[in-house]
Length: 210
Image (cartoon, rainbow, N blue to C red; front, side, top):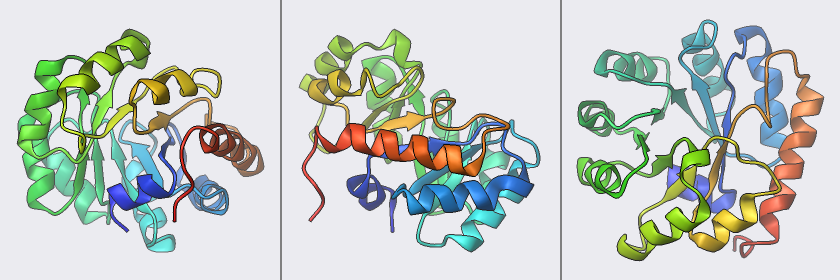
C-alpha cells in the first residue's frame, strides 16, 4: 500500500513522538486494529530506527516511516531500517529528492504557498502544513484555490476532533495526529481508543472508501 492509498483508506497519520522500541509493536497493533494505515516515528524519539524496523517488519501492509527527518543521511538511515515514509517539519529539497530517489513517500513541512509549490516541484507526495496553529482553515482554503486538485495537504499541530471538520471543509486532505493520539506513558489500549475517536471524527466528513 502506498501513501495515497493509505490516506484514502483513512486520512490520518499517527505521530509517535517519544515512543520506546519496547512498546512500538503494541502501539502499532492498536493503530492497525483501529484502521490506521500510516505511522510516523520522529527521529528525536528513543532509538527511533529500532522502532521503525520493528513496525515495518511486523506490519508490512502499513506505511511506516520517520518524522523530523532533516538531512539526506537520515533519509538513507530510515530507508535502511525499512521505512517507506519521510516526514519533516521543514522543506529541504535535498531531503525530498533523496527520499524520492529511494522510492519513498515524502511529506515535508510547509507554511507558505511558495514553499508548497517548491515542495511539490521537488517530488513531495504530500505536504505537511505545520504548525497548523499558524495555518488556519481560511489559509488552507486560499491555498487550495490555487493548487492542483491532486496536491495533498495535511495540517499538523494542534489538531483535535473539535477542529478537523473546519479544515476538511476548507480543503485539507487529512491530518497528522501527535500528542492527542500518543504521548510517552500512554497505554496501547488508550491509544487505540483515541485512534477510534479520531477515525469516527473524520468519518462524518468524507465518503467511505469503496
